[in-house]
Image 1: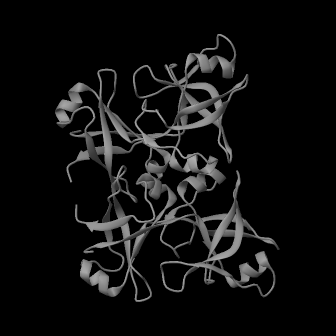
Image 2: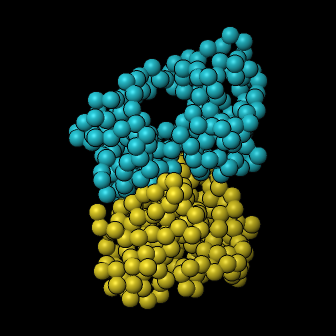
Image 3: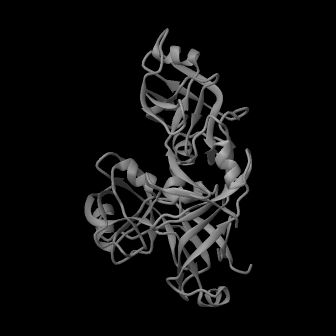
Length: 192
Length: 192
């Protein structure tokens, strides 16, 4: 599988701080793992929230655990537009000056001033795979997703390298639909 | 502008037959042009409809005129999924065995058994530009959309050539979001 990895679709989701979790779900709440994700120690949770924008709200949005230092909301551009939020395209964690929203849980709600982003497409690699693929952390690469009917070569794919990662590319639902991605889609770094 | 053309985003819309128009908008109704489109004699209309799926409905959906022999609904994959319709990826006009839906207008509603599609991305060319670009009708080509932050090279772009066309590529809102397309985006046929 030279230069290849699985392509996973990230539907809208949030990461949450312990403080915000307790406001939304009650004092001393903790996240309940529902399903392991491809990245080690990351999991989708039983808990869900509602993301509220000026125009509309999105119910049943997943929380991905474990808790993080700061709450972050990742939407597709379609999602953001549908609820009336102008969210910037950012790497995860780079939320300064990004968009705000209201988040509702069963026990309370919070208003965040920043933290709503459209995630830049990216591929997680281990140091070993990065070396093998001749790329390094923060490189921007082209990745071909060779689907049957709607293939594409995505540019501006951020390479992220860590011993804590497993090789996998993450795209949002707009990007997944633009290539008709399925559960078994494969990405390949190409040099165009 | 060798091999280049404008890239336009087609939001969800319908084409409608005279018979269906009269059911939805009343006897002897005609379409009211609101805005000319890039393709000669094609226009967006003042009239709007609601597209109803098993899960939800989409209000305020544009009608593109003039009337056509058959009613056709073009949604993004995000749209189709959101209202619970499993629509196939098709070229405009190729609707046999495609999805159905209900369509509501101010005076009535219709139920279509087929006609709901996700449109294949395509580029309209005149015979002169097609010859200049060395492509022909029905070719599948790669088109680079060189945006600032989310560039991509779309594969499986259908070439459509007619004396009635003006050069312009049409992508849906999922595809537009996947490249952060704007009103001045340009596509370029590339050979990868």
